[in-house]
Image: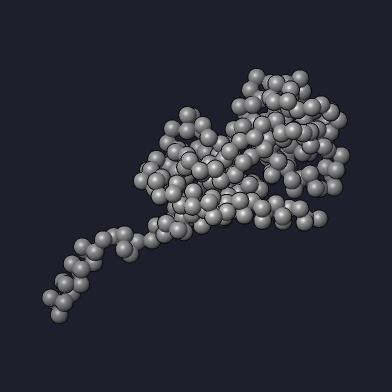
Length: 238
């Protein structure tokens, strides 16, 4: 009996750990992000093809980046613009575009043609804390930084700003609300940005295969379909 027990013990001792371990990655995401409804299904499918489970936890934008970069409890960031790694040195971009973000200008009273960031300089601007594209674009301008999109819309309706700047996809549900019917999107976008998934450097070994899988999904039309399906849902919202 003892010999049988010892044989079983040594069998499991030398069996490769990866055969019975289930790998799960935890990814940070910005709370209340409409874009996440597009990119989360993309990454769930990508990691699934690699045999990896993935979960997402939402945080305020700046804290989400801090936790992903720290890497103590989390394995990466859902999506951000490229170049983030210059400041957050522990994060590595997966070099496949999973979404294209359009930064738009929303106004209550002011009307002008948007022509890049310098065209918004004369105005009082509201932006959301932790959103890199608007933080960088409005540097040295007259701006107020708030913690939520809800607060941005509340304050522009109260005439505290001339304009607010945020992504088109994150503005959609707010612009459809009755209290915001008096607001207008000023075209064209102030700038467009490609979005990339970021992994913590401790997961750098996943980069080649994750890149391969995402490129396959892009070629198959899976990435575009995720965006199209979500925008179709938005278009039918009351």
